[in-house]
Length: 245
Length: 245
DNA sequence: TAGTGGTCTAGACCACACA
DNA sequence: GTGTGGTCTAGACCACTAC
Figure (cartoon, rainbow over the protein chains, first blue to last red):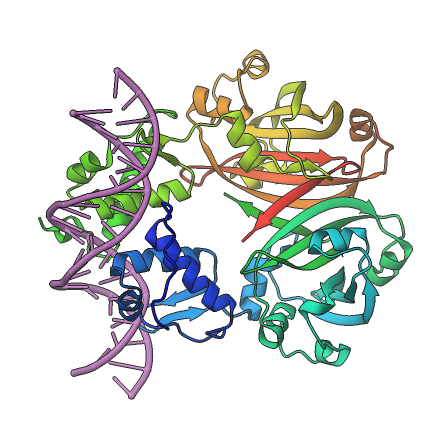
């Protein structure tokens, strides 16, 4: 990794230029998730900046959870493992608040066309081809939520049901390992709705019972939307938890 | 200048010591919300640390939204104005996503005893005296949510219904200005439930209709819980929005 | 012992606000 | 112009990891 940077003539701070340059290289897949970036002293020399400036740039990427520092070992490109899923992206917990890993059950994988909501959220034209996947998640042996996932076919070329079902880790890990798509940020919109008969059947509840719906849009490093996921949650024994600063 | 002399033996970084010291002074009300703290160079000299270390301490407090920097003017203790309410603490928006200020309507103010949930969340003993307040919030002229607020009587001594109703700004601003209680962080737990007949009446909907409930616990600078608020939301035209990193 | 990130210094200079 | 926060330097030394 050398220090070729485009230094804008406007007042952009040097550390931001370094940050953007590093980020673009990571987004381009120059260093894979789990691998270490070059040491700080080396990067500082390559970019011809002081160690303080270089560290400030890396601070920003650590803040965005794109990089992870480990003292004495190095700085690594963040990887989507089970730990990260539970900690940052899965917000459904039992009423007593103890987080546990969900068991995921595959229900359906098909090609479809984007409806209005999907097209709007994923910045596609209406009727664009998408993959439509349905999963059921259980916590403590009890079915708790149904996921309806929509992703752009062109962003995940050649994805198959087999590949989906046989993924070794989390869904976001599959996106990252197989397609170089790293989810770094999500937006979630929640409503209370009456359960449809189909969702009621899958969740083992009565049709019309109140359920929580979570509409999540997931964004990659370049802040492009990559996934729309509508989760329908039975909140009889579980709830959605958010900590807000 | 030997900074190591001021350093605790347990290896706590100097900037954390400075941060905690500053924070305690702010929590004690030494500088009021809206007022400026001393300039960085002055603070650095007072603490006998370099400007870089002092800035790192302030960075942390800015991150926690306890301080706000304004280039060329100074660094100020954060104040709970309408802007801050809308931006950080009010997460109910129309389906189209455009944020607007809620109109607040007073319904009830009374003394009560803490139920099990309130006592648990506010770290009180069951049956401890609390103020119980009910408000109705409207957006665009339409009633959207009912707030049930519980606060410890001992934390807000002498609070009256008149004072509550005649507050000039937001509720959190009242806590801050009149009682020195600054809310810096909240935890929210969401469920879908069926509207009670009373909530249905207040929201102008049918009893049993699905509504979103938000159980919010608010924490002060010392991370003590100061308020439990249960909001019951009609999500027919509005939704809860959260952005998660 | 060598190599990594983490802390800290003691400045210089820039950008912005205000009188 | 004066005073504020914002950026940047060129190091030194500490803490942790792995061999």
